[in-house]
Image (cartoon, rainbow, N blue to C red; front, side, top):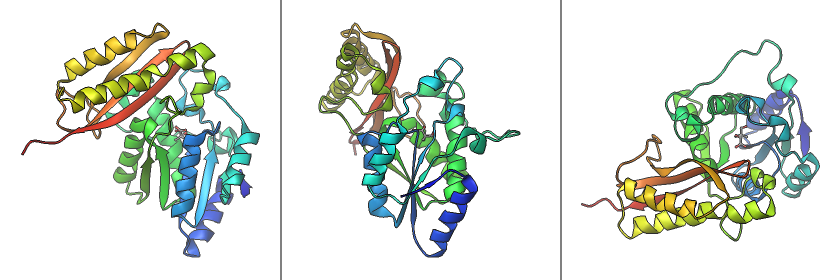
Length: 286
Ligand code: PAF
């Protein structure tokens, strides 16, 4: 596994691989790698000749009140995990190389970035869009891999690829869960033992709502009530940012579920904000 820190060097290496007719897959990450990330890496390995993973904690996607300096970092363990998967290149840029003095471009995806998490984390998605666009331009991958847990992020990245004719195949891979259903996330490391146990409420709530949809409850007001009541049974939930059903492409809240819908939750337990989602579908009546 080769370590590259300089964008221009990676750009040249990726170009050489492409010229040799090799397919290049990219897995962008912010490190603190868990099984969710590793499932993306394994998928990239299976589908491409060359796999590049990036580890970069992107300051532009953190708000002023979000603690960038406390974001979990564990480079040594991350490199060992990637080495074990036998990937080709790990990209480890630093801020001075990603955002050198004079950097003044931001990628904005209208509307989609203001919904769900965007309503609570202003500029978060333009930070994500900017760094992912840079990574795509550096690597020019054939395929790029993201997790379904960050569903809104994946929708926004697909939009960028389409709008800017990037010709990259964006794969959205299933959420990897702990045995008790909690979606794997680097942020789970922030949870105390008690909070970790409480966090299972998210998946239990989503599963109950999915069950309700299956049993014929398709009015979103009713589903929201079911979900809120379930969340309120957990005293350690201090804040619910959203919990409802959304159109999976436009990310607008639905009134009624017809066809596919995204059940999504964002809440805070202790000081940790967690998100999760499930896709459900109601067969459209003929
Ligand atoms: O999902 C993440 O870890 C980040 O948002 C990403 C896509 C690596 C961009 O910094």
